[in-house]
Length: 70
Image (cartoon, rainbow, N blue to C red):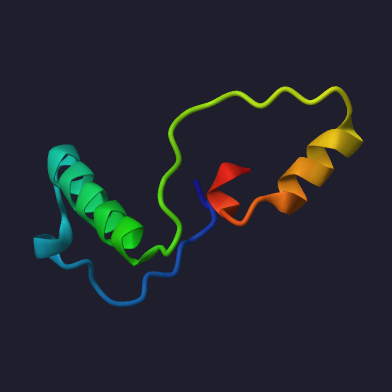
């Protein structure tokens, strides 16, 4: 048992910060909503872009003004 590495603990964990998974999900959803509100580019609808080659895909990607498309 003496070969076990010791872990250095700095400070103490605040018991109030422990959240349930549902609370964490709610907070993450709220944070994502705020980030989407600040983003100048709208979230695009789902679509499929089929390129015949990597070069065609790269040229399409460079022509897009919304970085959320790729």
